[in-house]
Image (cartoon, rainbow, N blue to C red; front, side):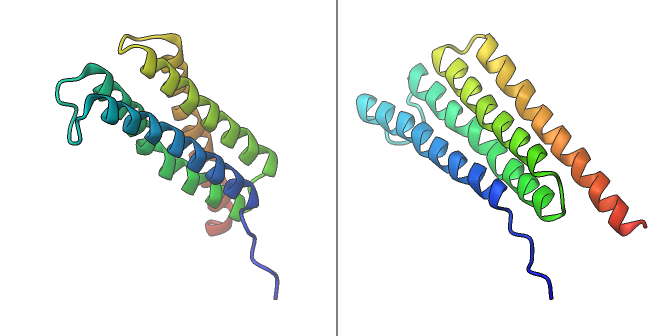
Length: 137
C-alpha cells in the first residue's frame, strides 16, 4: 500500500502563516494596551485599523491553506504550491503594511488584495482541473 501524500510544502506555508498571525495579533494587543480598550475599538481609529489588519488576514488564511494542502495532496506541482504560498504570504504582508499605514487606498492594500484573490483563483482552478481529471475520467 502506498504511503499517503503529506502536504509538506503547504505545511511550510501554514507555519509561515501562523507566524504572521502572531505578529498581526501582537499589533492589535499592543494597541489595546496603549489605549486601554479591551473590547471593540472604543472609537480609536488606530485600534480599529489594527483590528482590521488582523481581521483581513484571518478572513483569507484558512481558505488559502486548505486549498494549498488539497492541491498538494491531490498531486499538484510542488512548484505551483510554493508559488501560491509565496504569493499569499507576500500579499498578506503587503496588505497588512498598507492598511496599518492608512485607511486610504494605497499600493500595499491594492496589491495585497489583488494577489490574495489571484492566489485563491489559481489554486481553485488548478485543484478543479486535477480533481476533474480524476472524477470524470
